[in-house]
Amino acid sequence: MAMSIITNLFGSKKPTSAQIAERIAQHEADRRREEDRAAKAQAALSDLAELDDAEHVQAEADAAAAARAIVRTDARLVELRKAHAEAVKADERAALKARAEAARKRVGEAQRHLAEYEERAARLAESAAKLDAINREAAAVNAAITAARKAAPDGEHPALVESIAERFLTEPDDVTPERRVTEEVWEEPSYNTGRYTPSVVFSASGRPQNVAARKVTRERVIPEKRRPGRRLTLPTMSLVLPAARLGQEPFWPAG
Image (cartoon, rainbow, N blue to C red; front, side, top):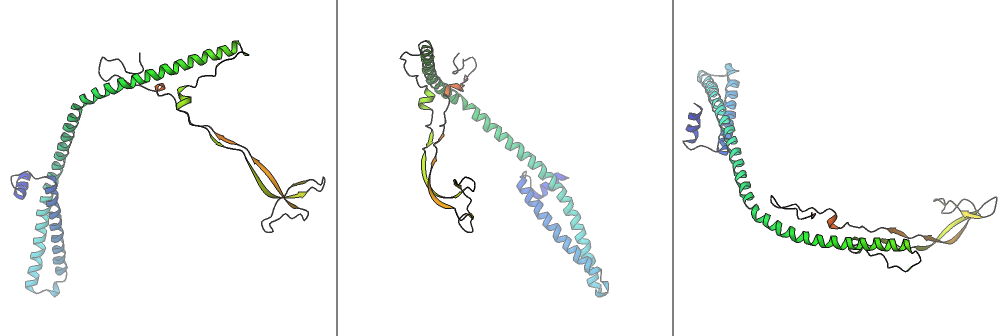
């Protein structure tokens, strides 16, 4: 029965969820119109004294016709909503199938990217090995210099070798140099010693309460401020380059 209603409304071609939703909206609008017609008929029948015979018959006919139309519309809406829910599920299955096909196609493209990864990973591993060798050499030399200094503190020894991080991966310190500023300040004498010390200035008068206070010029030194620069670690410290395919050794760290 449900299929006959859908077929009557849409024909033999299977409707889309959007087409069914449009018909549902039309039927809901039709139902509201029939509800309005039924309400008007009931309003007229509620005041029978004002109706003549023809108006009475017409009001009853409108009320009955509206009631029948609402019942028919509700029956169609039940089937339309059921069909719409099924169509939505079918759309979701179709969309998921399309996504799966697209993902399957993308996975098929991975062969080219794996080959590209292998080429670039091998080059990167080569650079990493060179950096690591340089850093190990510098560390070994510094260890030897440190040992020589301990063995002969008074001897002449070369300066320690800067590591790669110290030379290329470290920002300079942010230094604000020492400054000297000249300020005018109020001082007042101590009642006990007579020595002048800084006094409290009241904002209303702009001077201390003590009449013996004096304004003097003083030089103040603001010390140097230093913020250490940021230092990065050598890239090989955390570099991991796994194999691209089964059976291969990792590119880095090298075994």
